[in-house]
Length: 417
Image 1: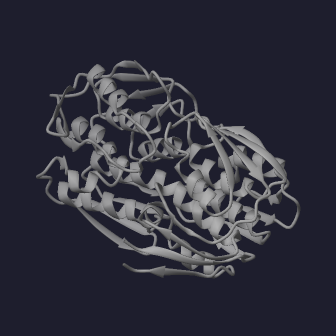
Image 2: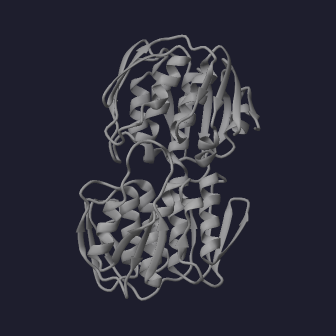
Image 3: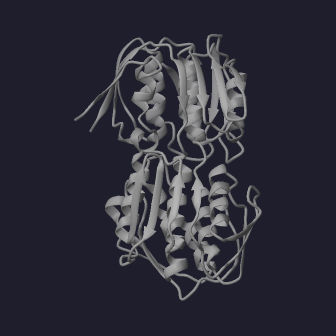
């Protein structure tokens, strides 16, 4: 497995352009299954999860062609309505193939998903919604099998907010007979982006950006050209990179309105920023103050930024309190940060981060995608050499991170195993 060798400390200075959002690109790729026409997606990130989804589409029967950040998809001959275990086990978002396949073809076979080891993320809400719409669901030998003659519109309330569940049922409802109303839906920007793409394909969807979605099914959808929104989590990660290294960065091609909760916490921590419509200028040379926050569904503070903020708070003057309300195993990075000199106390779903603490290089191991980013950020501020192992997690969601950070003044070497 590849790993990073990082020599710190450093001070990041320069400009960085944000690529398309992985968590918007993946459902958009799943939506390709809803039409036989060509679909063009722009601003596509070059990350492993996108490559994996492309391989799944190829197995199902779609040609995938990519040139730069533009990807084109066209159905050739659908012959295998299955998303196999060998691919699905590495990426949870592959469950998004379930709704489109059963809605358009009447059958789907999708392996139970894998992904990051950050606690249980059951797909029961996806399945209950599809059953409400008339699908017959079985779980056999680690695969979800869904069948129906044609899905019918239904009224369904999510027991808890689920992004992929909302996306799956929204896509399924787009081709169902009649009206589907989804209550307690997710309102993340990636959900809205998918809805805008479906509308461009001819879907009839009302309520985007609200907790209630109303979808009137249509007989068929056509192709479209759709730009993927900038990645708000990548934006937040590089903002923390600038702050933890006391650097000066200009973050370009971003959507600040999509990460207001993160900007508010960074401002409370003393990070100076100038925010424009598609750009953020950060000056991180001031003292850092401790903060208290709780992760929650959008528009709250995103769980995908919790680990990065924990690294930053090791440098704040005081005690920060971080509560994780989304996933139960998402403090694994705290132990690795402690190996670098941090002082973090975990009590259930709460982490107390004591600072400021001088960080030192060490050998650490990433447990998931965002944990790997937090360890890289800590290494940028640490004295000496840090080895970050298992960076395949990082490659799932960050496009050429070492190249981008090196261009800003970091010293990162990818060691290929």
